[in-house]
Each structure stands twice: as structure tokens, then as C-alpha cells.
Length: 218
Image 1: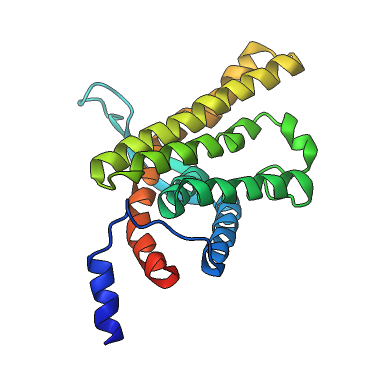
Image 2: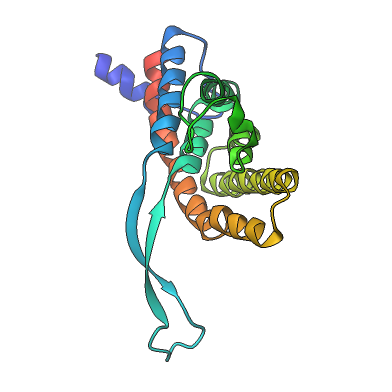
């Protein structure tokens, strides 16, 4: 009987109309989301794939094998936004940021209040508006098209704010322009492609996970 009731609730689940309430379960999930951000910060995916290295298909190096080291932090943020929405998603990110700035070395290069002046801190701050945008885009309709739009806007938000913050820190430190360009290329060039791909998959994964969470906490 319980199995049938669970199946009926999952079958009638509608992501845009079923909002999570503040319960002990919700608080546990937010804590899990903070832990997920920390884990993703120190997780490195190592894989190889082919890229187009030339416009000439007859070029011997038309296809070239590329080695990639990727940290899936941005897809994790998009997953959290799609999973628990704007209010709880932003709360989870704010907790992560406050922990990193106060007592825990949970950012990529450590932690502490001095991290405000790190060049990459803008990318972390940008998680907050990114969560808002992704959750807002998925609020009314959770489908493939909206997931794609949310992914594009979420990833662009993080990288645009991150680049502006990086430039601001470079101006404050009076760094040469060549170094600024190099840092931007390292943080926001090819990496954005992976963020789009993995971010989209993360958002799609959030829906079935949210179904289970809604039933267990609702």
C-alpha cells in the first residue's frame, strides 16, 4: 500500500508547484548541499576527449586528443539551485561562503577573511545570483528548453561576475595586463564549455532527485 502511494505521488509530482517546506529534513538537505559544494571544490575530473584543432579536415591534426582537468563546482551550484530552489539554495551558498571566510579553509586556495582579495573570489560570490537566476528560470516550467536556458544564464552570470571581480583585483594590485588576460583565459575560456555541458546534465539530474526529496520531506 505504501509502495503504491509512493508511486502515485511520484507520478503526479510537478516540480514547479511542489515547494519544499522548512522542516528538519530541509535543514539536513541544505547541510548536505553545503557539503556537496565543498566536496566539488576539491574534486578533480581527469579525462581525455578529442577537439577540432584545425579547420582543414585533411590536416593530419584535424582531430587532436586533449587532456582535461575539470573541477565540477559550477555544475554543483546549478544542481543545488534546481534541486532546492532559490531560498534554500542561496542559503546553502551563503553558509558555504561564511564558513570559508570565517573558520574553515574550504575554498580552492584556503579560506579566511583575506580571501575577499583573492582573484577568484568573484566566481564564488557569483554563485548567489546564479542560484537565483537558475531557480527562477525553472520555477514555472522544468523542461529541457528551460533547463538549457537556465544553464546558459547561470554559467554566464558566474563567469561574467568572476571576470569583473578578477579585473578589479588586478587593478587594485596594479598587475600587468598580460597577466590579467592569462588569468581570465585560465578561469573562463575552455572551462565554460565544460560548465555548460556538465551544468545542463546536473540540472536534469536534479529533477528525479527532487522528486524523491519532496516525497520524503513533504
